[in-house]
Length: 88
Image (cartoon, rainbow, N blue to C red; front, side):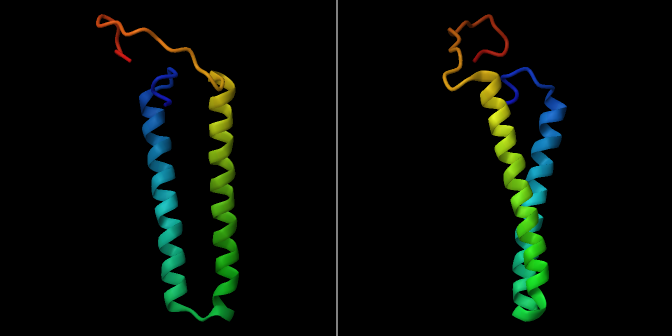
């Protein structure tokens, strides 16, 4: 979606890679902690991880909202033109 709105491709790749690795690391930390610690010792770490999941969710929603503010709910549909680059 970001590529079509004119954002630099390098920036898009960095943001996508960051969110991918951040989310995967949070899931793996949750699984490892739940398998290796007891509930009374691990509750503090779970609260910390849930706060990180919440921050990730809020930033994702803010990104979706900013995209919708820029394009609207019904973005302009371009006609197909074989000579146009990118051809979308």
